[in-house]
Image 1 (tube, rainbow, N blue to C red):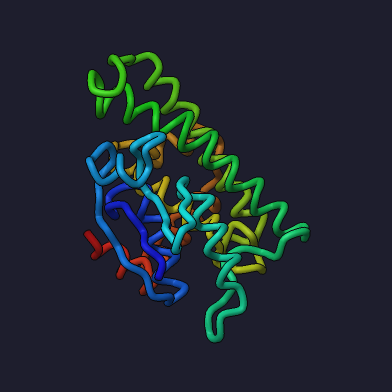
Image 2: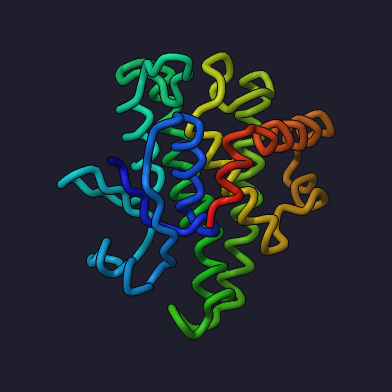
Length: 220
């Protein structure tokens, strides 16, 4: 039995969404970061999510999703959510995921959480760092919106269809919107065309309307 530790209000949502898309059985423990449970399940960092499968455990939400999508590849009636290893499509997937993780999550959204939302708890307040992180995050979203446009406007990987990369991007956009980032006028200043802005809006609406996304949103 798979066990996913982490509340849906955090990065764990990315994994819960994929698990719901895959339709596999799993247990969910809605623990919060730095909680006693998080420390038990991830003693190295006290962070969530953590995936357990028998004696095997792993952390890092994007890595978990790639593992799960590979593990359950070819499930009857369920599309694949990551391309096969060794293909150009998989290379693009890895590039997008690593860009989102390092440039948008770590260098953008996490800076806000560390130095603004949780200032004094994890690190001191750093308004200049947060302002720079916001500006950088806008540039990354603009780049990814360009990737979406070049791929046809439907999904980041184009004809491959919905992937775990889209789940990561949508969650980051949700996070950013929740803290007041990614306003339309700010993205326009990064050079996005009206067509690209419309594609991004429609893309988000489609992803957020998926039944698995809606089920994951209802989880604690």
